[in-house]
Image (cartoon, rainbow, N blue to C red):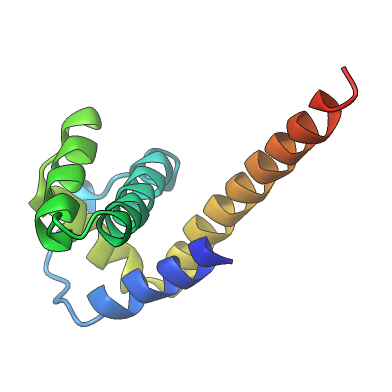
Length: 122
């Protein structure tokens, strides 16, 4: 549920950006999915970290973790946001991407619950 709310927040927050990139600069949805998942997880982790440790600055932590995501996927911040803008300005593509992410999250959540449930019986 928190992932869905965070996804909607990110979409609404970034939906006002201009769309001025060329389609050859666009990352395929298959490649964009893990980047976007890591980005969302980084944002959620930064918020949780700052909630638990008031000495941390949520903006600084968020940027630090985003930079780690961008480095991991070998892209720049501007490339990520250009692609995010593209997907955001093409709702059918964005919905496909989000549906895939939600399905991935649901599958992982079910696997985790299954492991935790069966762990009690081993």
